[in-house]
Length: 65
Image (tube, rainbow, N blue to C red; front, top):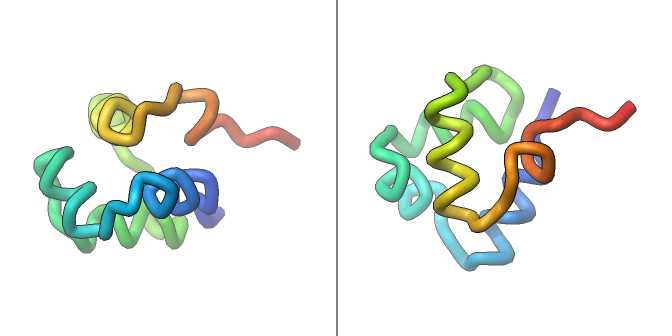
């Protein structure tokens, strides 16, 4: 499932995928794969992304159905 919440939060901070990747010590391709729903990040990477985007785990990764 695509992670549109993460993509929107990244855009709101005016970060490119490359900038977010650098902040989280991963490749741009990893960020792209997470946003496309092709990769499930580890909890440590989820936390790093949340810190970089000033969001909580629930705000970015909890799937409300």
